[in-house]
Amino acid sequence: KNKLISEEEMDGAKRSLINGYNEISDSPESLEAWYMGRMLAGLTTSPDEASELVRSVTYDDIAQIASKITLDTVYFMRGTLSGGEESDSDEE
Figure 1 (cartoon, rainbow, N blue to C red):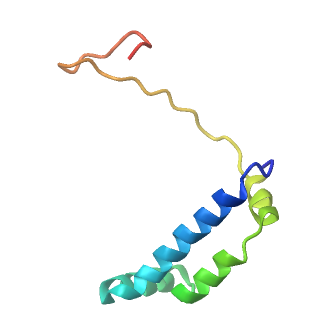
Figure 2 (figure 1 turned 180 degrees about the vertical axis):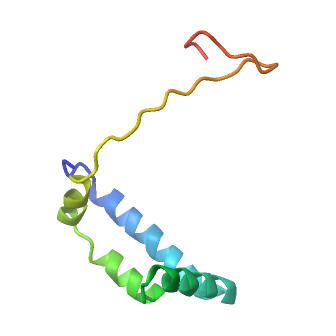
């Protein structure tokens, strides 16, 4: 929300997504899954088009979307001791 993302983080995130989209073309099964998922969602974007969309994302785009995110639920996780008993302390 506060644009506290470095240029390296932004570039790394984009490269990761783009590499994933590029790998879709490596197998017929991946392509089938991509287009089937898109068809079911009513979308027609190809992996190449999705890569171009990722390349065009700006800091302002991310901040605009992030500003719409609100906290919905908070979970507290507790561990178990060996043997399956719950732990009563926060030390574990």
